[in-house]
Length: 284
Image 1 (cartoon, one colour):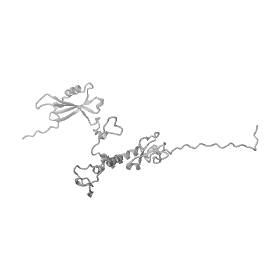
Image 2 (cartoon, one colour):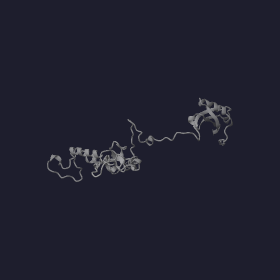
Image 3 (cartoon, one colour):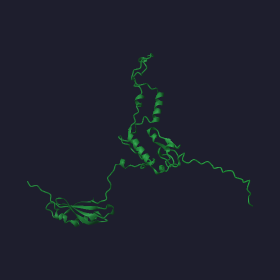
Image 4 (tube, rainbow, N blue to C red):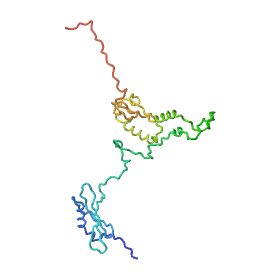
């Protein structure tokens, strides 16, 4: 059995078909046409690609590849395909990056929606336990403290049974829970808190030029509104309309020239009473 091997030398007739390949490249690359012939690459048995420089300035380093082929024992060369391909020094578009990694602060506009992944590390489950405590009684179950069969006699309360919450009390607890943030499906995780603190510290922190030149820090400013939760120990919201950080979250170590105690109005200076010389004589 004779096994055919691929020749390392390009087919002679295919390699000599430069004019045929150029004619096709000129037609496809119109109106700029194709540049000089850059060489021949063997693709297979009787299969050769001719390379021509691309003259389009938008495709610097690219080339036109015209692949020609010849059937076995045939004397005529035919065109197989034409393509614009990048060379080793070609100007290529950067690798595609998912939108979630391309998004930057300030990119969102009116009407834009930013979905959050289910496993976003910046968020954590916001389970508060109120759903179990405030669950309505199951029909047919006897509430704790009430005997079965409508008997008005006091019955012992079963140990471990969930407490019965009256509608008014339930509404009050739910209002308080909403006020302090309970009931949300997810809340900030430790990672989310740290990333937010790093961003705020970088924008309105003690290392900024404004804070370095400030007469005092925001910790003692009357225009500071403290945050709630654990971040109140380090951050607040500026409420001074003349401050560059008005309406922004600022570090307690931040400061600016609009500090409430920075420049108090000086007391008016009372001039001393006039001095009258009763002993000397005024020259006329």
